[in-house]
Length: 411
Image (cartoon, rainbow, N blue to C red; front, side):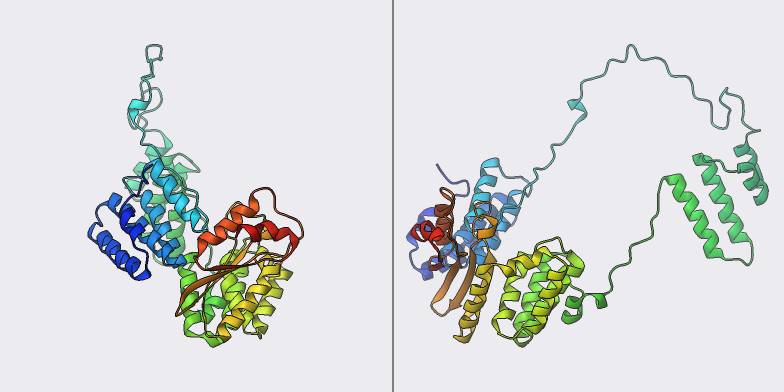
């Protein structure tokens, strides 16, 4: 069956060298740039770009393009169900968590409702004219009309006395107008306080329940904002990019950075929210061998019973830290560090950790499985082992224990 994003499949298959794939990648990006107004063409080109980056071993870039493809599938005109499924499978095949997609609501029309039978509907009583009483007589003696006449003559106290505590919309509106007029005409007094009362009166008439604004947490309370010298972005993506850029510019202060991101998560995000996206920064700090600030921050998270700290107590994390230290001493470039390779397939206590390393020869990946004496459930080991192999063309699996025998065989 033809792939919904089919484009250049024969050229991709014939490009066997990295140089040929990079040349084709450049063509695909140029094709996408020329078709920015064609959403369908953008989807096909984005899939080709992600696929070529996957073949080149550039996992992070391939995953980024796969997420862009999923976003394009939700752009008008919305993609078909077959295209959405293909985009999900591609992102999942890269070892990424597939976000839940909410289908756009169907446009409703008055035609959707059958016409109501109004034959048995009773006749409504005629409404009294404006300014008249319920029986239709002129309402000149009503409190509202008397208050209106007094307000027109500038007798503010008389107008307020006739309005009393009336809660109707007209009473509230007229009362607010009288109070505002009196506040503006009278000399002395606190004009701001008077106008505030008028505003509250108008708000009640409009059904607005005004609450005092919640003061934002000052930057001085957030250790990450203090360290970065700028307020940390609220969204996770921009915040992580800012953290990575700061780490690259200040490699000698990675311990400070790891401690700051941990405390930021505890203070701003919350103790009951996991934070697998912080493992890379924390692992780099621990790999230096001396990370007292990071250790102190981890102790604070443990004392707060934070979920984010549980990942650092897992068996593979210690092995990953050692690998990062050795890689840095050998001059290798440390890439992404992730916990888990197969969303929904791995038991939570047996997540496989991955570490990506780069040098002049290209990218390779080391996968570390928890030591286990009990075997996986039927089929689980094969799924996880196959996913490890699919994540990188040059992968090494470290797994000990008799419970990982099937995992080693499948990888």
